[in-house]
Length: 266
Image (cartoon, rainbow, N blue to C red; front, top):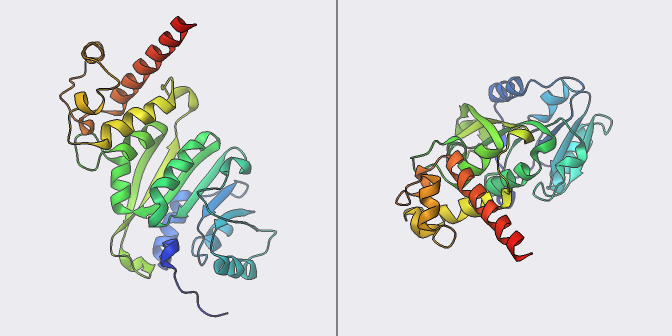
């Protein structure tokens, strides 16, 4: 079989450093009978050492050439290949207590993270390699330029920890930027305080749509002056200055007022 040529449309940068692979597998620390799914196994750099510690492994892969290589290399008794786009895959179908790992393609990393967050109830944890800039946005604290919609929505749903950096030379072809490995642990459902998560998402999206403007302007269609006073939030502040808890209070107030208005109409 001819050597595989990395495809730009799939954002393929294959991990080739044995030292980095070992460090990632150690961070995941998979146990024999756990249910683990790898997103984008590629040439199997992580797949093989994961299978050395697991009874069975699931992988999600979209590239047919790579799928053929995986089928030739690994037995179906040990490896289940789910052919298709990870953005469309139903991870909940693999059951509760799922562990998700992968070297995520840079070109779909943000929408994929939101897709995974939406189905996080049955997930135990996630370990991903991503572009360093994306990981910095994920774990960013309020007040900096890296803090944004991705930060708020993921920090609401997960506890996150940046584990270590990975240099471009660990990949083939080498990307132009550094990567980082991040651990994401879903918060228990009972700890999630949003009355309406859809409302929270709307508020955060609107606030960061024009991040240099004051909240009074970006949320003017949703909140009046008396709302800001009741929330004890200065409407002259900008989106990046509010903590996750502030967005929760705004969303819950709007959800409560919507419920009250609906009740009055009834």
